[in-house]
Image (cartoon, one colour):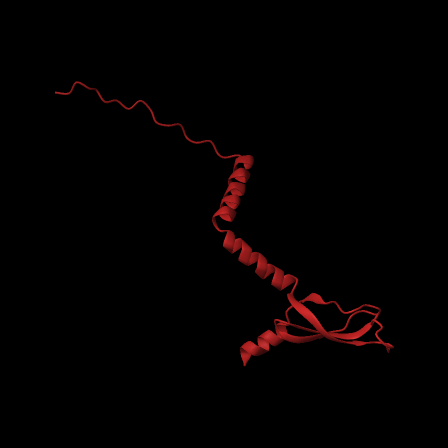
Length: 119
């Protein structure tokens, strides 16, 4: 009835274990693929890391010189600087002989954030 004789000769040989270089290349390729597929997630995590470690931008608004100035002289050394930003008004004391900056990055005040959540 059958003209064909079915016979199993062999199967595929077992795969050799991957070397360290192939595993490293596969992981790097997966990381590049994740960056290319999800750029928004990388961007948002970068901004979150910047805010957590560096701080948020604040604009200098008010200051007090540590010495008296006459006329329209500039303040060479400030006693305190008031900045306005994400968490409202923040008063910083610069080092001796330093001026107030127009824009600066001030770290988050975690105590104030926790107090706001617990209330």
